[in-house]
Length: 415
Image (cartoon, rainbow, N blue to C red):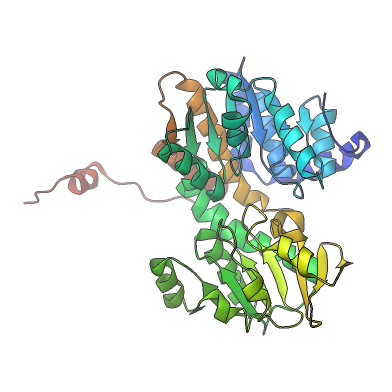
């Protein structure tokens, strides 16, 4: 049933999964509890998340909780073939391989959906989009789903505003235990892991341009500054731009930043952030990378069309020589640099994000039939529970409000 590159790679994938499991104690505790209660017994779950070791462990947790799992990746260059093989060798339905063509990628999504999911775990919104456009016959069987990332939540809100979203979707990305940690610290570290691993170049002293100052951009800028770079932030939101300025970064339009940047990192979730007008004024040798979900932030299509020559100068680095002789270097074909050129977020960070996913999916199963279509927030009790579990796992404790303090905070009149 599965479609993976090579099942013989499974032992390598198993080692990766075992390693991250050791460093994901919150999800481990949830696995022990849910494997007893089996909240997903009799349910089919289709998951489309970056197919690497942390995701594989989440899949196994859901399976241990009773789910029939059908899984695929959410980005053609983020799948690790040995991890996909490990899940397939263990009997799970897996449809993913690294370097999938657009046609293969959609086929994998489709095959993961064909069994008829009751719950969807999405990352970027491709599953939800496919169900609402080409596989609408599956909608009656869907209880709801969870969305992992900013880009997917944006797409969901657009669908909800258009009154086309047909089932409830929980915006996991918006949970405090997700975006405050995963987007800021996870992206901040893993993006630089991918860039440094790929380029093997010094960051200190370079001018780094970060496009977008959301939680991902904040983490990227913070780590770039820590490496000793001069960091410039570009933004369209005046509040975020002002925040970046007060955090100590230079703020300017991309067209100005393009003239002086050595390394560019997009993290906006939007289209057309770095285009021809920016390429035209860039330095010879500038490095281009993307940390947003889709490969539309850097205009890769223009580079390929306009280049008089191109070659892969290192794995995951393509040199594009433009008319006039200037060469620009694109990392990971403009796809997510932290996953296409690295292993993604640290295990300890995904421990929280995937704990939110597992408990949010359980919330959907527990409340089937009572939730209305639309974009739902992660319940506060789930956010708080994951944070409390993580604190305990870290050996940390905090104060507790007394009854008198609770009364004081809930009253408007004080004698």
